[in-house]
Image (cartoon, rainbow, N blue to C red):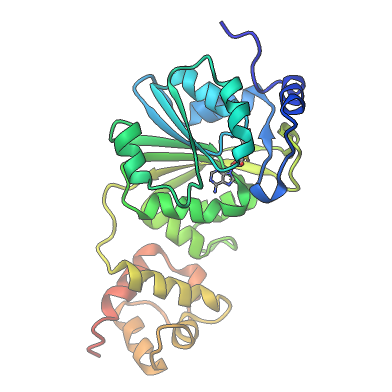
Amino acid sequence: MIDKRLYSPKYVKEILNRHGFRFSKSLGQNFLTDGNIVRNICQAGEVTKEDCILEIGPGLGTLTEELALNAKKVVAVELDESLLPVLEETLKRYNNIEVVHGDILKVDVNRLIDEKLGGGPIKVIANLPYYVTTPIIAKLIEEDLNIETITVMVQKEVAERIVASPGNKQYGSLSVFINFYTSPEIVMEVPRTVFMPQPNVNSAVVKLKLKKELPEVDKKLFFKVVRSAFGKRRKTILNSLSSGELDLEKEDIKKVLERANISSKKRAEDLKIEDFVKISKILPPLDI
Ligand code: SAM
């Protein structure tokens, strides 16, 4: 049924030349040109014919095509207007794909899920534009959307920070943030050679499974504590919390840590999510 698949580098060049397309570095355009990687991403996302998928940044439709072959419906949001005629050509044989022109950071994803993806739960699968990886993931996990899993290609270094656990050098506020909302895992590493043009960094695919129940805590305060703690990560937790945005006296922080049973000599990188939760719960209303 399919004569030419979009991951063939020769075919990619031919289509892009014909449309006079120029890669935009600022839009993070590094297109996949390896069939195995495309199939593996789709498999990692555990896509079945029951699934409705949101893809971010279809590019010229390489991953979109694989998703459409395996899913019930795919909605792909692309920011670059010059890719729309390309996508119209490359994906014309699929009737279960809808391309939406827009910036994913501005799109009302909740409405999109309701109106175009059957209300969810949906799966998000994408080779993300690296310049906005964190804001995109943050939007998807913070907005309480009906999303089951997010399987995305990111910079390898970002993937390592996402899955890092306490005691690890890469463990930081990003790890706490992602692990607060999801259970993350790295499903594969991807060399830079499979992209056109090749990026300067290696990549990895992470899969984030959204948690059904979150710790019961004031989120705003929790993340303020986390930011303060990691803001001065070389200092002890006592010093970092008392010099950060919490605006509290050292003596008060000392009492909070005592009550939470956390040694004030520890550093942010030693603390688990539960420790940050404990601290945040004891902080207000500061009856110490
Ligand atoms: N999915 C394609 C692939 O794997 O070959 C392309 C991936 S490329 C790394 C990222 C894509 O995201 C590009 O097509 C780019 O134009 C698009 N993009 C960049 N910023 C975006 C945004 N804010 N919203 C939606 N798409 C965006």
